[in-house]
Image (cartoon, rainbow, N blue to C red; front, side, top):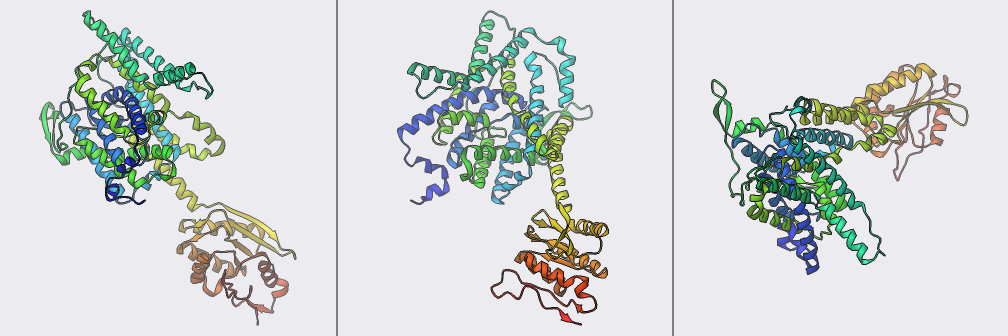
Length: 608
């Protein structure tokens, strides 16, 4: 049965085919479970982004609805993430309304860039970011995020540095100012969260009793809703002390209630500080000024968002996922979200894993999650003010700990030490000079290795003998392509081989080469002329049809080519000094390959 017109315009409506009551219950359970995860995470990630807590909830409901209509993977949940929150925080430090307005505009522009990537089919750009670079980037980001939460975790007040090193230095310097109650609450919360996380590893065998299965389900539910439980319990503790007139913890404070207004993203703002002759007067900034302030984040945030979302979609949806369709869904999630005061969002691996474990059947589960977030905005926000900041920091730290992927170092060290270099460059520079330049440096390092491998292909050089004892130099490229950067390298290797082994025939083995470019073929022609002056024949062995056509065009009648060992044996015998001295002159040896009317393997040698 083909797709209807509505299903072509709104792909998500196809999930409604056969949408039974069982599916409704499964999606409802999964949606509520994910909602219990996203509520504390949204509040925490908004704080990480330098925004008021309600902006995390504003960012958590639109994406799920849009993805349910346009997405292709039922497990993916769209919302705020630690990584994008950190990148957003770089532009929210001016204070006043400028922080949220810059974050909302960044969300809108990220969606526009992602939509352009979908239209131009540029999703493959994320393939330029290798696994080691991704690991280095996410690991460095996890450390930066963790360090940024140490102040709130320990109850330290006052400003902090803008980078990883300066933040850690500030925390160390102000450690004597740490509040005992916040420190204990934060450390205990992390320990409890990590312990509760292990509950999900308790497996219930299929043949277990009903009581054992119930216990297993309770353990899974506690592990899944651990963030919400910790936030709930610590909020009750803070509320208890508040009713007694005591405030041992630094609290989140008032959270604006209600659903955000539907409005256009801001295209101008006012910086409350930094202008005027004394640096304190408000400065109005137009759209161009906001673009200049956001800078490279306009391109980098979408790329990171796409990288994460595509990885999650492939992890859960397999090869059946359409990357362009995922790009469209993600872009519209950001564009539509910006009309509801959202900052940049993407797929969350942790929440998607929760969604998968909860037995979600369709992306409609995201709509139920969004409904729960809206309910929280309308009803629960007065109580969010009692959430200790140390508890939110514990939620963030316990989540980003597992972004540090140290386990890939050992296999890379054993199998491919070279790949550790781009990862290490990304990791170190991200910590020292910032995640944007660190990621860029890692990608450029990777590309430099790719270019180097193209310019310096691995060539196997050996001296071989035919059955009749004729020696020749065999040069075999171990790569499937030869491009122009490799021309001089091939000529140098050939010259060194001749100096080492003498003036004997050179056989260039092309059986593994599937692609030549014109410059490389011209370089081979120049090599052939150099060898011709030394009366050394250059023989091309086993080229494909495409390579042969290009070589015939450049080398023309001087091309000497064979297709198998027998032809090579005959040709080398003909070219040996004992048979050729003063009797034969090579005119042309051109053997078409894989042709239905092939010429004889070797053209006859004319008498002089």
